[in-house]
Image (cartoon, rainbow, N blue to C red):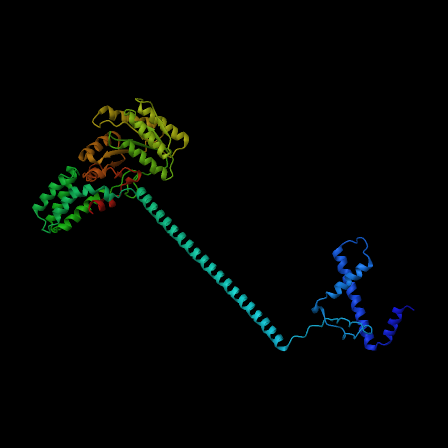
Length: 484
């Protein structure tokens, strides 16, 4: 046996059990360290390389074993005394200890911190909910405000539109209604009616002096001598019977007498209103006569518009071939109201033009044919003979035609208009009168004279330029407007 082995054996024989345990622990720790070192070396080296001498490995393991950190653990066992007699003591080996359990104070602090965290989280959640509700409330209020503003704007626009529509309807109604009869008679009221009102405004007893003043007013009122005399004699007789001693009663008596004169019924009149009535014959032929400048052609155009508005079909015959502008003027009216027109060449026979117009109206089933005629002075005998011829020829074109002879008179002519009416009536047999330009004169009293002397109903009165200003003559309205 070698001496070293002998010494080792002697040394082992002298060791105690504790020494053996310490040695075993040291060996175990050394093996663990070696295994850890091998794993660490493999990680560092990566893939396996060339072999390293075993001695080098042992030296590396020893170096790593001696460099273990103190905190890696505590010694597994008390250090052995010595490995052999006189040898150095084995280094202490530290073994890691499990962590100590937390104390009760630390656990309570952790619970309180967790509860505080939960409470803070709950507060943040409630605040977020509150902010969200506030945001939604503000959005809802803003939406309601926008809706109210929109509704107010729509209401304002609707109100403005309604006002505009009402204003438009009012203007349209005024345009369609035209001037009132009272407005048309304004100059007449400021004429002889103003003088009559001034005569009766003093409150004095009616005597011969008052009657003399009344006579002067009536004879200068363009109502005609015959009519003025009739009104004056009637007033004197009632004053003589002491029925009209009061001026107001005398004015009332004059009003009643004028109403009686105007309220006459003639051919074609309806309810005393005098408007043109379309009979059963087709076509219903109206022959329109009158002197130049009386407004004859314009009256035909307005009358055509009224008949069209009433639902009648209308055809115009331009029989005034003597005046070149008459045919063009009537053609403009025909285009405006949407009515066909029959025109002849300038200077053509007016009877032939009217004959063609009536024949065409009969062929096309037209309701009304309005025939214009020449309008030279009524004192020219050739004119009257020509009009008689036109009337005869129209009668050949349709049985019973013309069904109405309408005379157009200019109210500004005063008593001369009565003379015109008398001449035309004697030549043609006038059925009705259209009195134009009543708004431009103070001689509106001529209506009274025409109705009294000629017993011809007034069909229409013209008080302006528009179609609506050609108004059907209503005696009661005329008296109201005249004595207003």
